[in-house]
Image (cartoon, rainbow, N blue to C red; front, top):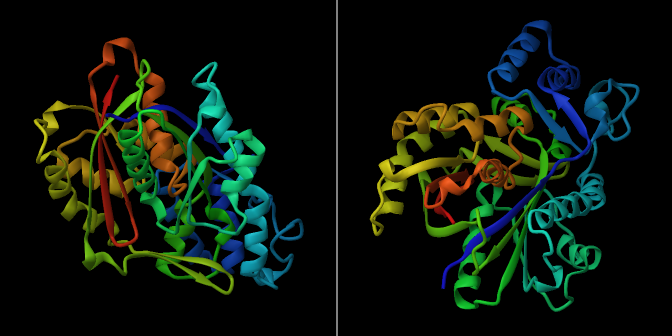
Length: 366
């Protein structure tokens, strides 16, 4: 049996913020001097991001009008992990529902009762009964749907979810797997004036994506041909995600692009090793835009042009890095442009995360 991505849906929260707005917010929140503020704004301009989305209206306001952060210098008392998880509980499921509805819209007449498996993915919040059960209840999925939760794997987590869906569909021709990734990165803002935190605050945003995976293809669906993942253990400390008393704290070193640059060629070769495929056979690229420099070093190593990475740059520009849903936004962007003449074309996809984990996937257009 084979498995196919038959539909992808996406959703973002209502508050859209520009990088200049966020830079203003961060400069005030960190209480930095004018010289540091100029450096911060230069960092934000260099990200390749124009707008991001958030569930928090505070990022569009100035101190005095905050609803979540304290309306005083230093934003004290700074929100606790409990307050942040309450915000996650309030906002995660509605965003998932929007993404699922957008996904189902791609397949007119699709009966939600056909869904046999539900895989939920998130690293920015957790509770139980959780998002998975709320999706079952609010979407109206069968109560006996088989549920799996993938938590705390970070930006590459859509790949383990797709691997699980692939195994399920190859084993059961009647399986219909719904994957839902949701991340509310913006609720975990930390006030630390360190390079790692400044970089994380400059990149991450909120969003959700839903994917249907089935054994039966549809026109324009994507056949999942192969996966390959690996670890660069030397980068274990360069990307990490920890729970603190005041939210989840991201460690994101500026060395991450260098590590990806060192490993991406071997990763690609290993993906192709048992296939009669080479880079020359790849027509489209769906690369997780973890940051502008990550895209650039991959282009350098694989001899790609920025045009090859068009969809990744557009998602980065308009949405930022939403962690696990982001690569699915890129895939949806590609899928929307596909025509009948694209049948048989191959898509090479990558994502990266804590570990340092490198994931790759090869798809073919039906």
